[in-house]
Image 1 (cartoon, rainbow, N blue to C red):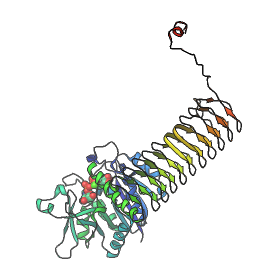
Image 2 (spheres, rainbow, N blue to C red):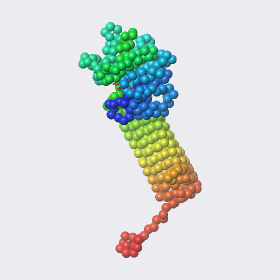
Image 3 (cartoon, rainbow, N blue to C red):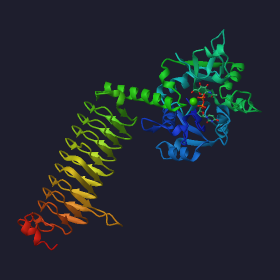
Length: 469
Ligand code: UD1
Ligand code: CA
């Protein structure tokens, strides 16, 4: 099969009531346009031409950062004159050297999967019809375009937009899903005619759906009916977005349950499309796993934790309300509750990173314990070192960041400030409350704080009278 895809993404999405272009609104942490592009490329399209218009720069910038960017082309639709006009804006990609078949889809229908789209494209090509339309039967056909079949052969005669439909046509429950497969030569011929003159449609737009009419006159349009109408949920409003998110979440979570993951409450747990989970992972309510996150076997993630672009090994216990981004955590470590791992946090095995501990760009070797109220930034801590409550690495001097190095088996007393750059060697001790500015040799004890002064009977009358402070 030699196929290209055209993806419609120029509309503002007025009904979203948003500054942001509709196709950049997210479903499970990925913009909707990403789902459409991946489905098209996954279904076998050699390239995808994205029609941009409203918010063209942000849409384009986002797409150009993706790994598939070299398979994308962009075409501009200056004015949003309708879905038919939008496809015509890709005319540079509809010449004789184009692939024979062109798949057309919208950037606001995020639940379609590769296999279904591939089946559709292949069956359309096999049918030899100039145009195939994907359809579905809906209990509530809402404002989707209605599919009018011809009485004899069952082919699709035309599609009537909801706004243009008669009361009787609105009774039709078979709807246009918004996915088309067309022979490229048919498009080249039909689009200029479609976009000629002023459109006489209720919305004053050139409808792509009017291609069906034209194909019907040239041998017919095929209607390819889909069994699972959830795949074609289109997003026009925020309520649709929530519904699409719920469907995507259900599908993803169900798939992971089949692979041996426990969800205490699947309806409140969001797992992004690029997340990988091992068996016996347990996810509590309100957990969000986003981006390229990997979680190993037997790891438990408790309520309200957010993990993005991170790798968590097996048998890790992530307690409630942790926030983890671009970090790595090795086996059997305990995190949280309320731990914050920032980019470059690299935590070894059997560590403990407890409540209100923040780690950034730091390696904690196996068995390090930082249980409470601590900031570790630009640091390296050797095996089994114990970090007391309230310890802070002072890594920033106002201009530059500096490194803190702590050796193996060291003991940092509570409420210590480690003023970097600094080196605390293996087995060293630091007394509680110290501000440490000089390196501490192996096995030494460093204490850097004002000595305690105790004034006896300070509160008694005599002592108060003598007070000259
Ligand atoms: C469209 C179909 C409708 C179908 C429904 C399925 C038309 C006329 N109607 O309606 O039959 O049931 O999808 O979801 O095609 N766009 C542009 N440029 C434009 C207009 C739209 O790029 O000038 C893009 C939008 O960004 C969007 C897509 O085309 O991604 C669909 O447009 P939208 O306005 O959402 O069409 P629907 O009313 O949903
Ligand atoms: Ca739509």
